[in-house]
Amino acid sequence: MPTYSHSRLETYENCPRLYKLQYIDKIEIEETESVEAFLGSRVHEALEKLYKDVRMTKIPTLDEILEFYEKAWDENWHDGVNIVRKDYTPENYRELGRRCISEYYGKYYPFDESRTIAVEHVVFFPLDNDRNYWIRGVIDRLSVAKDGTYEIHDYKTSGRLPTQEQVDSDRQLALYHIAIKRMWPDVKQIELVWHYLVFGKEMRSRRSADDLAKLKQEVMELIKKIENDTEFRPKESALCDWCAYPEYCPAKKHITMTSKLPVNDYLKEPGVVLVNKFAELQRHKKEIEEEMDKVREALINYAKENDVEVIKGSDHRVLVRFYKNLAFPTKDHPHRHDLEDLVRSLGLWERVSVLSPVSLAKLVESGQLDDEVVAKLSDLAVEEVRPWVKLSKLRPGDEDL
Ligand code: SF4
Image (cartoon, rainbow, N blue to C red; front, side, top):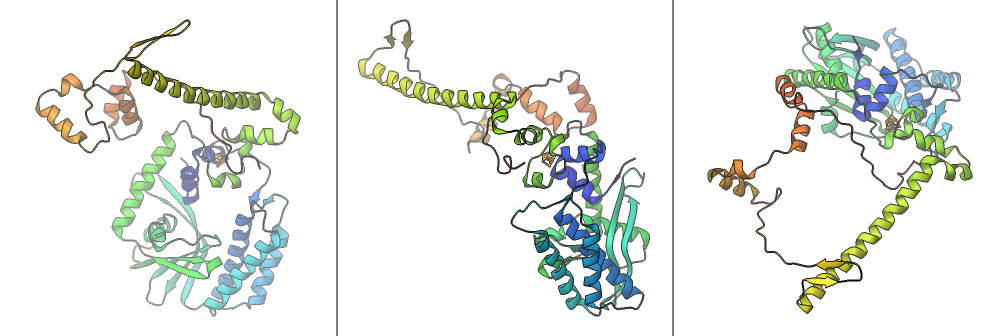
């Protein structure tokens, strides 16, 4: 039975294919790590040491903590540390870490706001009574404030400061709240505390029993969705720049492979040739369609001006005829509901409505129907694989892979 963590769930939400490559296929790749992750690990280690010392009644000096940080930075740095934002050097990131630690130290010294009871504390617990869904996580620091409130602390070195609304709906620390409540049911109050170190800002939030019950339900639904996924579609986003698996991803594999080719070989590569041909034909098609619209319009005007309905060419003839139609409100028209109500009340619904197989397929696939209903409908459906081909401009970053 797989164990889920917040970051595992988040990976699926960000990109199902990345989730599959990382957690199901467990593709082994050369050791790579984003510089942001590297920086986060070093800062976490430094703060872990700080609080371990404090717990042992020793308050280390800032210089000692910074020395620890610098040493860990040098010892752990490796060739696989990847800097995506090319405007910044390793030294910029290193200095950012120093600043995060120094500001934190200055703000909380002598670290007696609350009593630390655990650092890097591993939690592992089931979400449901049947113990089918297990969550694992690591609490950066757990402490007890002077009024007895348990505080779950999390250090963030991200360069993005969330809103209060976002931290109020944060999943990670809320899951840890559930874990702490299970471990110590007598705990009266629990507070979630984020330290956004780059901004020197602390953010706090609390959760009610209802919030936590809702969260458990949502997480179990998400896990079911993951376990029932058979496609794991790639979801391209800005995060692709940080992805370690572009060579294995159907959305990035060809781009990665061809970007390494010398320009002559690149232009001869069969996929590149086909896309270029397709783009050229699409352009012609558009030009021809625009030209046809103009000629069609001219034929209509000619027929009107000359009061003819058949216009003769060399090998073809064109029939231009004008029909009067009744146009009822379409699907998104504001009076559509009135029309539907009227048609029903007149007993005409069965005669004019038609089943939409596309809408029915979407409804079945949405997961909103009972399993029994889905099973009955599925008996009359056949699974088809239909290709969908769409031409678009290259995206930012496609050239750089
Ligand atoms: S490259 Fe992008 S789309 Fe492909 S697996 Fe990675 S994150 Fe997903």
